Image (cartoon, rainbow, N blue to C red; front, side, top):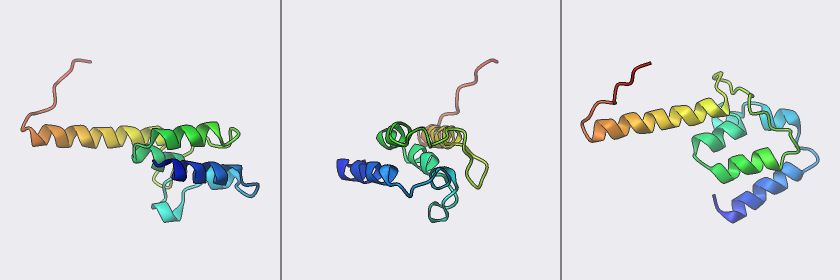
Length: 99
């Protein structure tokens, strides 16, 4: 994420009319995903940190999007897809681990 976009995000977080609902509710413009989930999905750690650090504790890490997923689930899902695509690309099967 560019510094300009991070600054814009910080300005939005500091705006007096940005509410808890806005920061934690599914956004229709982002296909029902919450802002923190979108930042995690897009692998934007600086945006995630900004949302968590600069929101005056208004961003809830356990908030769910309209699909029932939290930001952590979005990040895990993205990594799972990447791993499966990588394994398919090199024609290997994922390693089996014992539980």
